[in-house]
Length: 360
Image (cartoon, rainbow, N blue to C red; front, side):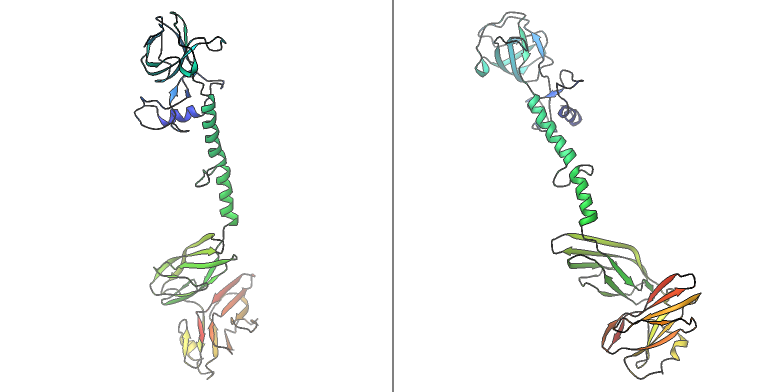
């Protein structure tokens, strides 16, 4: 049985090659090959193209056996040309044989392919009449096309198709983008996810890493257990293209994580997202349910604070680093995520978000 590696090498070899040697070119499937495989561009059979020997005994007109000096380089079955040497113009007899040993061809069909059955003397030429060049050329071309141009499905990475698919995935496939805040805090941690995917995405699937999902564009999610979570966003566009973004170890839920920025609902005396004794003293400043006091307890070389309230109002700039609180009134009910933008003396910028704020 011929190994696949030999067959593959045969597919890339031609009798016209500089290093070609007799016996390394493919033809048709051999009935003696026990593998049961059919001939293809990868499953080839070792044969000999234009192998030549001579009659060891005369071949009579009705002879059923062809006895030669050496038949070992001929295929197990195939066509012979008896009488005329390869390249000679004179006619010879084409004989098909189904069996051979190292010296005898048997199960003959005489006068094959319209040639004339004849009587041949001892010493007459016997050659392989099969020309396998076209057979191997087609296989070789097919293999090269698939290898270098690439298959339609699952092409090799270095093929043209594989390279184009890689660029398509890299530059043309939709690229989900998202951010979340807060990224860390004590449980229960209410996290707001903002979708920035700049494609015609029509479907979204969020995987929050805690066994729950969402199909909203910009969901809010509450984490209850102390753990570090990986978040994934899968989008599908109107053309059917898909993209996945994954942020490993993105959300940290721990009782040790405390945000320096929080708000106080002056009517309900609710403090979010956490409580401080100093903040409790500020809850009596207003009786309006839409009025909130924001507190920032950041320290360091702070030059400016930009208070952003996430509504229609403009951010408020406070240049005095010792002012840690500000009051803001929301005119319209809804959900808001206020934030504070810190500018430090060395021009570093850092932003903190509050937990979700709900105005009734």
